[in-house]
Length: 307
Image (tube, rainbow, N blue to C red; front, side, top):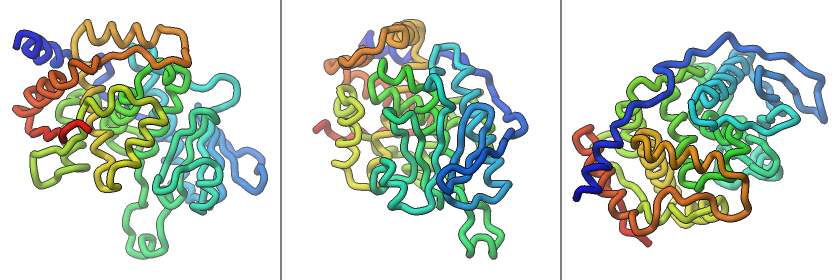
């Protein structure tokens, strides 16, 4: 019981990020076409596309991308470690077949490929459909998807040092803080995460269905994908939701948790499993601490039984 009380007290630590990050005016510089693909440079990234993007949609994408990099860079922990050398690449594909040929997994709308230091995006998530244009609806623009994948890219050289649940949780942490068009709000992350999870998983019910902590803590990148594929499509976000809550606990869990994460980030890259921040024998206690922390904040966490 004393351990649980300490967890509950320490998890309330203040977030060290700025309360708000406001995007600067988008910078987009056209480059020569390459193999039939349009190419642009933003402050941080190279964007190439085989789909015609409306100027406003393209500028908004550049603004979201660059401010995501700014947000990750603003964290006091050394999370920002993009690929060295060439400008990090965002590739947009109009056809699902081309998206998958370059490495995108079937059933995904966006993906980070670590070996290629590349973010892939299906083009229909960034453009208006003809019907939407006629009805003057907002573009079908899942910017949170873009933010999540770009956080992976911005953390390219640190990812190998962290367990996969934390890699995914940190990406989802920044995505949940994204308020649209590159604006990030970190002032009240408890409220931000609550609304994010309610919207994604349970709009009409405070109950939030989650996967067990024990299922995630030993997974590497391949294991994560295998685990997701073992779940029904409608339930896959539950793994990201669990990782988000664990990442929040790691970032807001007091000095010991922050120092453990700092130690992991300072470790040299290794082919072995990264430093374990959650031991298997503490997985059940971690779930209890999360349940007790979030209950008075309006979320009833419902963990499935461990596999």
